[in-house]
Length: 178
Image (tube, rainbow, N blue to C red; front, side, top):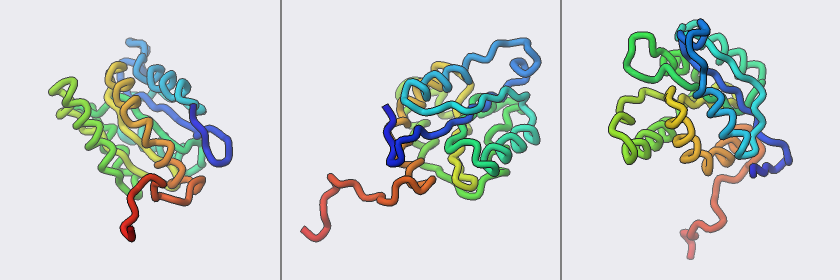
């Protein structure tokens, strides 16, 4: 379970980018998979949005969530592939103030142990204000796998980003002074 310095769970918003889902032609299962995994880990899902693969709409939703302090973490699902309509990374980069390249790099490396198709993901991670944005693939299986992989590091990342934690040093790290 998630435990934070102030005792409150981190707030999560989930955005699914899917033309067919937004039109009602397909049931979104990747967004609910992200919600379920985060709730199981003790996070509080405060918002879920299903949008078409339209960069301006994705940017607007990301700005709203980040600029109004609605969530500490935004998870996007879908729109990270090679299709001309896959624009989630571009929307994230357009609103980003700082990038966090290590997270998607690690996710792709982890995913490569499962499937070679992980190298095709263009997902990014970025910060806007005090909110972390993380692009996940559109596959519910990949969403669950990637979240399970990054969850052990997310609490610390969010603690530093939101100011709940002020120390980055690990207590079990070796001392350079002896």
